Image (cartoon, rainbow, N blue to C red; front, side):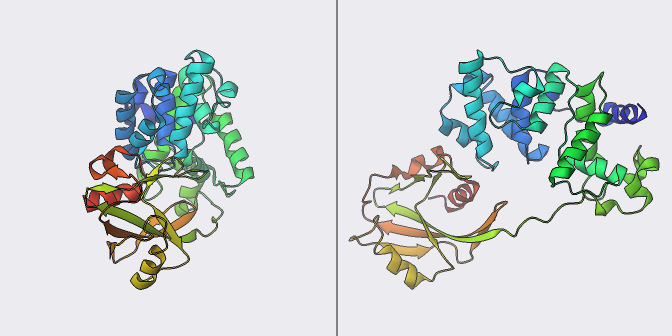
Length: 346
């Protein structure tokens, strides 16, 4: 097919040299795909190298403590990916004798592995012609074919998957899948795509109609909710502080944070101090309170915006054991907390 020939020719001349492209080992391909979900290559590459160094095989990853995995993942966000990564490694080792499934359908059964990752692994590692559809592929195909179906609709997901499946080079699915993703990332970019030197220019509907920026079409997401977070950064005279492990479901599950008080709105110093006087960590003891950041820090997540203040609480002695301040950096924490720790420097 002319489409795949043009694409593969472009890929052979323009592809980036990336470490996971030098192997077909399913462990390394799986690791790269999980890390790069919702993450740009320039951000994910250092994490990939760190994981490969720390956990050179699925056995090393399976035998690690979850806290080790979360600490190494720190800063990437979407921490459920890291927890699923660790759980799947354990399943591969304990349930499958260290061997990854070899088909798309079996790969789909792994925790944290969806259509995209299963397709990538099946095609790259086992030469199964299953098409990948990620953000880059959505963008390229929607522009080229002028498809107005929203990519974040069930109809769009099914339609683009089928289209990509119809186009795939069945003799060389590994290169085709990597090529179409690379083309979207480097040539058919979100902003200012290189249309003037695009090998698909003559048949690209969006280019011919001069409406490149109209694609891909998306249904607007619901407005993110707003929350007000107040973190208590304890500092005792014997240089100890308090970190708490988050329980229950949520994006920060099993990560550590400073004690948190959530309020309905921004709260002033006087009112917040009054709240603290009844807090179980401070009840009945003297403390000095200082607001670290006068300007509220806004931490944006996909579904909510966190309006955050860090309050420094100086006490003679903590009511609970806490941890030595020098050990704070050893704990896996959300990016929001990590940024504060770096800035505050205790």
